[in-house]
Image (cartoon, rainbow, N blue to C red):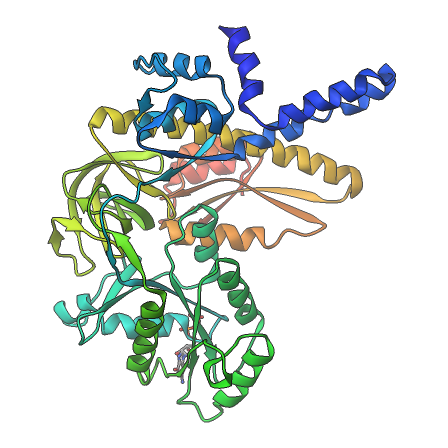
Length: 497
Ligand code: GDP
């Protein structure tokens, strides 16, 4: 069994093939030369980042071709999972395919068959722009016109997304986390939920570094931009200058013959908001956004938090299909049964359709922003998938730490003065975890290497102290309760900052 898996591990991963080639070349070379090939395994450890597409009803042969593992190995893993699949032409369920792929250390992307008719769906919008240009103010102003605010008399809860309904009956879904970190973190995790980016530029300040950064993010994600020139109520406002600046940065504005719409607004005076909403609807119309409505849902988490009474809560946006209360789900590495779904107004709803944000209650643990929501048949399946994903996450995490240390070693050889700062980040909600982590990582320089070894939501725990002690890490807490005395003392004893 041992020799089996070893042999096929090599087959399952791409990079070792290279290693094989290297060996061949080296056969003709003197043994002294051959010793220099030794660092190769480092490349091999990076290959688990390989991602294969899986789908319901794929045959064992399909999976074998995609993962590069022998049929017999796949059959062996399936047998361990209690599934007997005899022929390579037998089809397997998507959850099993994922479990097998995870066992092989390969990442998966779930593909859903285009069955069922595609119907128009609302657009999902993210607000980006330079700091202090008014992203939060704009979201606040828009949120006050949202469905939730109308129903709750202006009071809304921040759950990561909200819906604005237009007089025509059309609606727009806004992601409630401004900034680029959340956008790129979600995208990096394959959760491309944003359809349109609102680029906020202050009329009195003009194009700034983060304006350009936002433009690059949108461009890289192939997401169209609608420009909102904000603070037009100010005396120093000069929208024309902003237009010229944006044009010279290569943004093809409408009034210059391009197709990027520009709207002048004031988030504080709440003017121009209707024009912005209209522009977004028009943009959405041009994009002809559609999604499958029937069938199992595929969704992504945009925000997650723990509520004292209700337990872990995740706000998810459905990409396709319909999410139904009572279903068993796997969310990232967590699982549960949907006890209740609430819309952004906090009202219990039976189901959620594409582009509709809902708060999911009933998860056993706290997922992360960007995690996928997958509907499975049974509790047992949910538990198995969650366990498999947790195991793989842990493996990947250890591998990354190893790589981080190896990279650091390499760097040390070049620039011996570079100091490593292992850091553990704890924050109140997933959004801030990511924002803080990204901010810390941006401090990386030739002198300092910020190595974020662990992140989490919630107060600093004994587990964090243990981990910090094990790797000599600092702990950064953001917006969390002051740790209990026992924890503070333990940290002091272990000399942890
Ligand atoms: P963010 O960093 O992009 O989220 O910016 P904020 O929404 O926090 O806004 C930064 C500052 O600009 C705050 O003091 C706001 O009150 C102010 N501000 C935002 N929008 C407007 C506006 O339309 N007009 C004026 N006069 N001030 C604004």
